[in-house]
Length: 129
Image 1: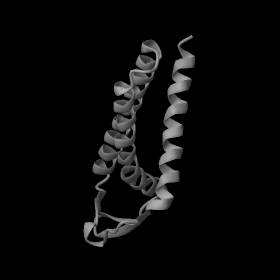
Image 2: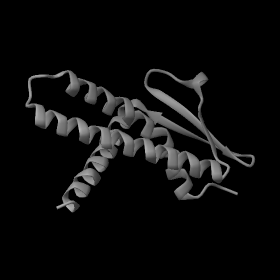
Image 3: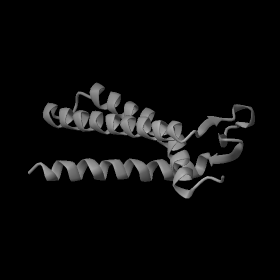
């Protein structure tokens, strides 16, 4: 029983999405501390950032729940970790695989996912009209 493409996508997302949270959190804290901008716009950005953060958290929970329900386990293989590469193992019913994440490639992946979340947020705001 091999892993289906959609399961491999979930595994990859379960590894990549948690990288977004500290980035969004750091930007939120910077906005909260910056008192130079207009209070209204700063609050709008902070509120949007909080929505973004909660949406990412929700997606992470859903992905982990789906993986659990299908019996897939994912964990970081810290013994092989170095500054440029992270290794993740995954298994289900005796079948195992490994996902290698290269630091220089993960930046682009993270940027693309952040952009996707921002686009979804923008579409939601436009629908409120």
